[in-house]
Amino acid sequence: MRAFSFLGDLRPSVALAIFACLALIWQGAAAQGWLPLAGDGVHDPASPAVKQLQEPAQALGKLPRDTAGNLVHWVQAIENGAITPRTSLRGENKSKTLDQDILMSLRGGMPIVRFPHKAHTLILDCSNCHEALFKSKTGANQISMLQILQGEQCGLCHGAVAFPLTECNRCHSVPRPNGTPANAAQTQP
Amino acid sequence: MKRVSWARSVMVLALAALMVAQPVWGEYGDVVLNQRSGKEGVRPVIFSHWFHRIRFACKVCHQELGIKMRVGGNDIRMTDIIEGKYCGSCHNNDIAWGADRCDLCHSGKPGLPSGIFGGHETSGPGRY
Image (tube, rainbow over all chains, first blue to last red; front, side, top):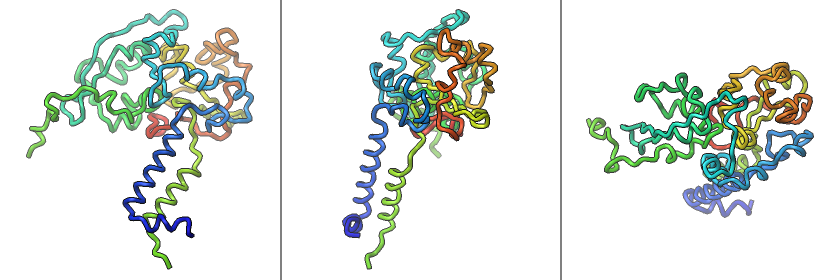
């Protein structure tokens, strides 16, 4: 019991801080780098595939680094030519890119969302989002973080295969003029 | 007898749980496909988004090949793949290995549930 007694003598707040640090270090260690296939928890180490398939570290290690998701900045990787993914298998897909930004959440409390069509149309077809997930008409979509966190709307990809929802500021990226919510006046009693 | 601090107990327990729990991790965007595999006596399929997106844009599979983006939205059978649909559009011993190389796709831990894996606090349609 001696081993733990030093914790008991600490104030709870100090002990809590130590615990938080330990937890962060632990999480940080888990987030560093890429796990080998044989130890990634989803592949069966006994499967012959783990000796033959490409390892994430080998494929992703030389691509532009990011801090979340696959630890790869995928858009940058395409833009600087590190990868050149095919946009069509049978030549049916005409490459259609759209360089247009949409500003959203104009009246919320967070910074304004800038949705870049360009980064999305590099890899996606218009029909992936329009008209089922999102209507093309500006202002016709009721977008909510609650839905996104539940895997709907933007959350169909972000939080699953595209950069995760922990990266608030990548979408909420445009500061509001004078730094106050645009609807501040409306929320006053 | 020493006074037992609840905060200490909670912290020690939480820390122990954090270290003992072996999360199903995978690489971000890995998909486990196990709607039929387990029942048919083979390992579940692990589909790696990270591997495929280096080589193909999302829209090749999710528009041209008709694979829906939502987890559970696709009911793909081996007969489809052998006929050259879905995965079989590339996995045909031409662009990529063919359907006879069962173990290369069916490589997951037996018993894993279908869904999207790969860590982080949210996992989109895989979790909900």
